[in-house]
Length: 451
Image (tube, rainbow, N blue to C red; front, side):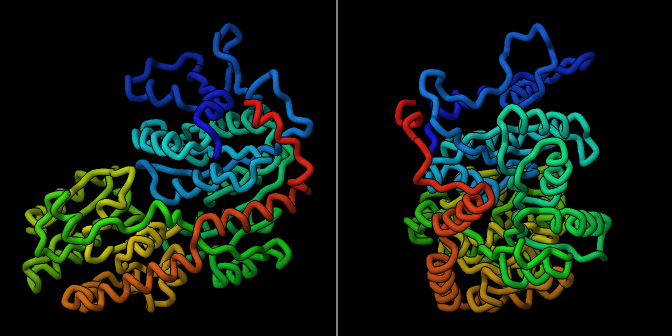
């Protein structure tokens, strides 16, 4: 585990310096203090990023630097926290793993991710980015690669993968990409762009980690060589996501009506998460089941629109907004079922969270949900293109408490058997070792003990 002291020493944040820039609002200024920026001011008093923990204790062999890069917004979610846990897992103390989050400049949710990183003890840098064509962000990332002497870039989404392909022509490093889902060539403009990006980038990676056998086959269809592919399933911290209260006790603690049947959504409020579709499905179900409630745990750019939608559909009195929660486990504990309505997910993290918390999930077939739920044997799978059918598919879970409990037990058992975070971390580190030709037992770690 990387200590907090080491995190601060290694990753001293740099302030933002842009020639001729207008003064920032207070929120943006506070965010920039935690962001990595190129130091282009000769007279600046802030030193550039240094990855040497202590000058007095130098390793015989420099630890290889691994950058975990992900595009995030709205405070992220369990996918980002799992990346942080991987970097801070301690599975490979001879590697120096740093999480790099790309985010919109005005995204206040980045503060949530920084708090998560402090709690987990993970080295983290944030890079503001104004879209895929932001050359300033690209130069910033190149400087980061050079200053940290990055040996490996691990991309955790399509945009990060594209940036890695571009930057390694300017800085020699290995490139690994994790693929949680692939997008078809049709569909929305966003999906078509992602498909084109995957088709360009994935064959150029040194290793592609597919989250399921089905995704592995899709990667082969995109001309990724068999020798480039590894299949490693999702992972979650099973010690952190573990039920500690009964449903009734959790409701008493948080003031939720004990007799209600609670549908819950734990997700950022962004378009691709489809939270509006959860509200519409709830509106279809409420006339049938008067004791039904919908509880939304999250925040994001669609917050106001979602509240207005609940009013327009006449269900506002039964829809509860809890805001973003850094530890959503307490809220999962009072859910009777978790609805995961995403329409364009890279990774169905809420499905895995619900499974670990013994909460049955009704989830769309995106982001690998079909693999997690074992094709419906540990939950309910929904067609993302036919939300009008969801109410009828969810109804059997609402009326049968025994069915909910059985699916919850199956889901937890499956998570324990196949989706533990430590097991996944060990497999990923083995790939790093292979690509970097590292023999862990030969690395001198005396510098870490001295630090």
